[in-house]
Image 1: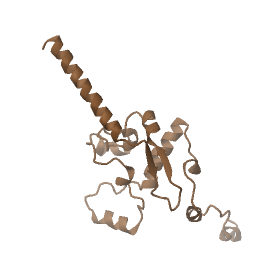
Image 2 (image 1 turned 90 degrees about the horizontal axis):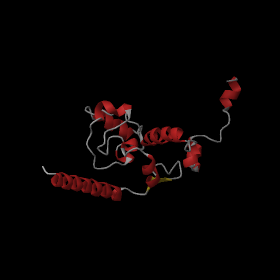
Image 3 (image 1 turned 135 degrees about the horizontal axis):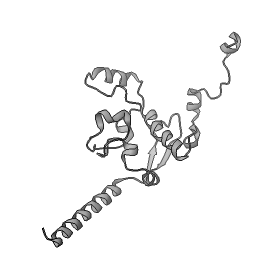
Image 4 (image 1 turned 60 degrees about the horizontal axis):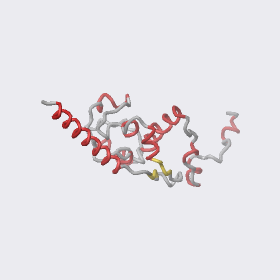
Length: 171
């Protein structure tokens, strides 16, 4: 190959990479609404554009779904060389109600399911978000990102300071 052919091939390759990167960037939303649990928490408007600038690559948050492998040690034994998936949204793999009767029956019925230990959606968000926020000095308090609704406050019993049973028994 001549120097001109090598240079032409290199330029075409770089152009293809640039076009591919631009196409991928065009598909990514700037904002993502995390609103699966709005019964208990106000929705969070996640600034995806800002977070894409902070992350090393897409797999920092999206595990193996982007076709870039994974850096998460919990996933590497199976997904170190995974292909890109059709969707990279958390809620497409992690269910909002992992302990519902429907989900428990679904897992029990699928004897070939390897992800019986897959966290629910809330845990998946928190594993990703809180760990990174601790490293990057981002917000880590529960209500720094989302506030509880009245139903959430009742569920988590935030207004209860002590139980009558504990006071009566001295515990």
